[in-house]
Length: 156
Image (tube, rainbow, N blue to C red; front, side):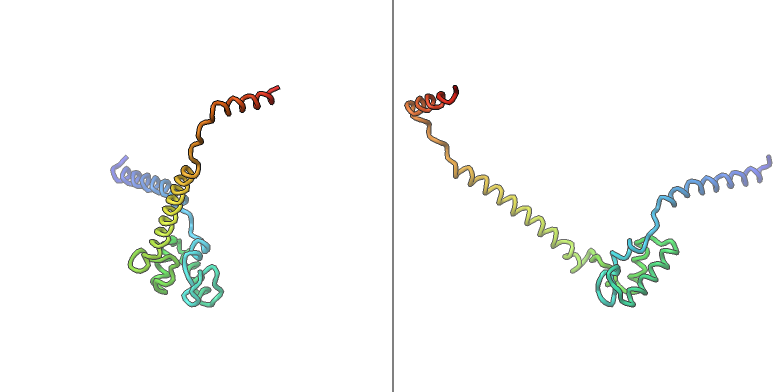
């Protein structure tokens, strides 16, 4: 076997191994669908989710999304293309900086405050329940004997 044919066979073997290894990875990546993207972007005209809008602008956005899906683009790439085409208002989720950050923080703070309030209320109710039921004083020995006699009459 000559050196050039050995190199050619090695390169061909490496290329086929690469194709075999890359195929499962490509097959494992799910293809983006229109409903995957529609529920995360807005119609720029009516301001509603794209999946709920019947405006002509929404149809144009859907057509662009379909073209990008046919090109094999991922959801993030499609959303980036929509932002480049229509501006940041097209994305349904708020950004992570500036005033948009409050849209993420306020619900979390509200939930934390509600849980803290419930915890505090539970502690107070538990303490109050302990104070409302003080220890019973012990029975007088005569009363205890009479109670035992009365209860024993039911043991027959």
